[in-house]
Length: 635
Image (cartoon, rainbow, N blue to C red; front, side):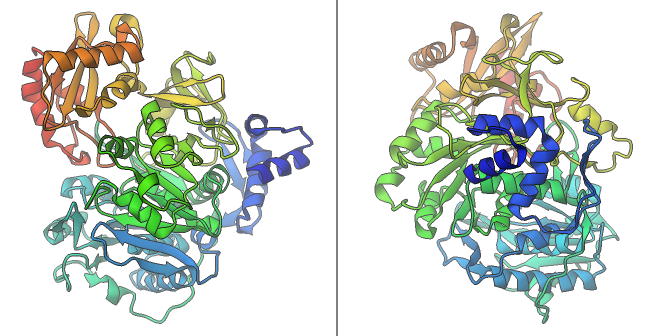
């Protein structure tokens, strides 16, 4: 970060004495910033850009016109026998290691299979896969040929997978024959056959990776082949087709909890630049580092993790439960593989704290430099636990962005202090502000997260949205020409950011706006509470705050505990935050990537239909809210 700041100061002629000055320059001069970043990162272009930024409006900005590149070529630019991918799983089996040189060969061999099945520029290749090396190989092979890649994880059911892949109609599907989680194995072959049948005639081949069967039966699948047979050829060098900067690289999907998932198309160049910036500068990664993020292939953090290869960093892939066979399983992996940047979620950190895990005391974490967290706001208690029980000298970097931009709006800055409860800084080149209304920015107050200057990782658009109407409605209807993300944030006097949750889940009792995270934090810090969800239930012209808590097995929701919860909320926030009702629930509905689904709870309590339950990790709990939950709140 410091090297880049010094370079920017020298090239611009501006005095850029610190991070805040560098950030201000990056959003004031976006063309100069992104051009210099591409140079600093050593992006490999086949043709140089004619112009860096044209039509600087949202939506509609044109980035790096005339430039051609290949995403896979940039990620595979390291030629070395150093480890590129370390694949581990919850079973404790020996890690599978691929060097950078080995990875190139495997990509070349799977590319040969794709070419033999007619895959070329503009085709779609989809993976319904665990977080394994084959998934990365398939993505790089597809990207090298100019195909567009999309992935989903085994915990999605048949309908959830078809809701996604059925819209984009892949030419090749890569899948495992099953999955493992929490010590249990599950065959997927019946589901694979159903999905393949529903995808129809455009599916040229289904490639099955053996995971739970020694020899999966691929008969009856269109072009069915086992992975080892697909890569049984002599290719050694991958093909890298030169493509325009905004060529479609990935199709990612919205959560699908309010309707059929939106297919969000991301371009190769914008993804490469944004990930390169976040990994090399904001996370300070390079050759010799080891990056891990706990993620599935159905979440954008998988795409972010894989881009670590661009910096020459070794990436670690984990398949299975983060807490099997013991809660400290991930920390043991960190110690065993010398992880320098460890990515997780607030939920996992809270679980470790409540179960008395002491990784800094019990394990050798001497190489660990950065702890990353995303998925929900990181509470001050999480900060305290990390610095007391992981290490006093780590950088704890809460990061926040989304599938919408396949990257971050706010994240860490390794040259800056960490303030408890805050994300360190707004990302370079990201003109993030908190707006109460059109062109009404505030500091020290809660308001809508907006971005006022174009950035290259904005989506190319949505799939099957020819006039851009769905894309425009998603981000630009509220503030014309300005990206409204849908999160509620506060910019602090330190230049940091506090996230209060989704703005569409904001509570408004008595007209006072309250973020759900303001109640979640003190409640989840209580030792009796395993999880919680809070909603604003309409009552006449007002709303009542209703809190549902999931208790640990040995506890009951009695008057004493209710009193302690109310006191904790009142002390941490204010009397206005204290719920009108506190009730016990069996579980909290979450998306498969682990995010709470407050809107689904509210819909169920109000008697409305909750669509696309296949997008949820535990959809059955919605039935409880629709029946028993409604009864408890008197609906």
